[in-house]
Length: 171
Image (cartoon, rainbow, N blue to C red; front, side):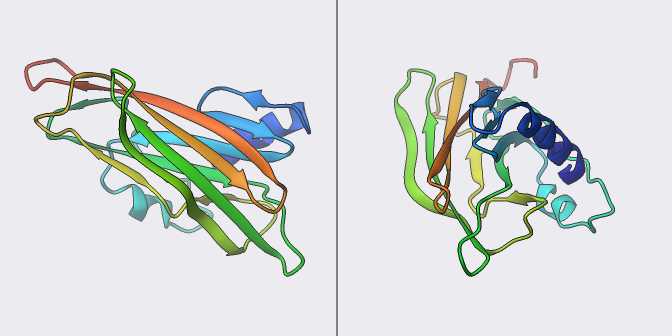
């Protein structure tokens, strides 16, 4: 996952240095790269923490039944480093119900603070875990993440959707 995602982000970064390039869930702004992945894989963390030579596979999915769970992973690459060689990346998180109302909101959550390699794909500390509760409305939910390189003073607006269905619906 790290290698494939990194290759996709590096390809985007060669297209433009300062313009916003990409899709809703994967963008490059000013050389800073961001990516959202939605997965139902409960073992995503163990797969992510494999050796760098291993390309872990994590199932993707954008439909979940009530009672099921999904994880929204936010990744970044090429943050600007401060004078000490540390990155400071934060994020705003919004999860919206099908009617557009807020299910959850967080501002300036720590994504990563500390030393990183300039090259490489990094997973944000904050992972959105969604559990389809019985009282949650069925329909298309939206996750909006604003990924911020606080050293470079650049923000990347990212979004992804998933569908919550009733138990009787086919996934």
